[in-house]
Image (cartoon, rainbow, N blue to C red):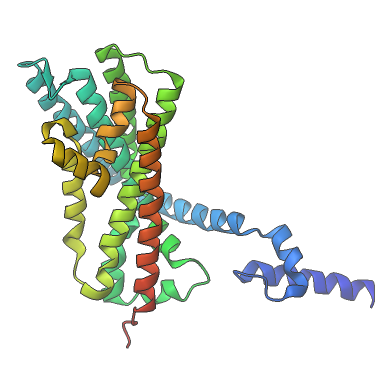
Length: 299
């Protein structure tokens, strides 16, 4: 075979790798894996999603800044209410003012990360109604990845900054001195809370495959964050156990915050990680089950 023919065939194979989610033939599998690994491919897709979301926000700069200020002001008024409560008492359910700030900040951080990265989940029922989900399931991309990360919500930047500042102020105010291991445990449990909350929202929005008009079900997830703002200690012991081992509301804020304000509990961190992994795979299974029973808008 001539050298020019070999070069042309190699170029053709590389072009085919770029357009197919999997190697089109075993003969060029190693070539595809070498130039276009799956992780890198999905990273490029997500980078495109992120860039398009940013450009969309920059088209309306004033509105973008207004939403950031609005979210930040909402947190400000919440903190003011919290300070008013603690001006009349030293502790609530064993949590002093600084510890309560850490607890509230943990909820804000968890919710802000979830809303920033996975806001597009709320669009699933609308996509089912309008038939645009048909275009998603036919693309050579994992459909769950697409519906989860299609939009990045920049509105939550202010909430993220405010949440970090609240954690810092709460630690200083309560005069606790967390060790590096405690900070690591706190970070792991906050990330676990994000995964748990994401899995719940995915399962909730997936019901739109059958119910169609469930757009307002996101209010239920908002209600969970409202409950999570309060320490588990305000509930009876039986309810605390339910919120730990049956319905993991405690892992959204109280249990992560405890790793800073109290002592490190490795067993609790392990339970949180198990909840995160289990809830993710359960929601993943439910999404795939829904996709197998999904009928297009034209059916």
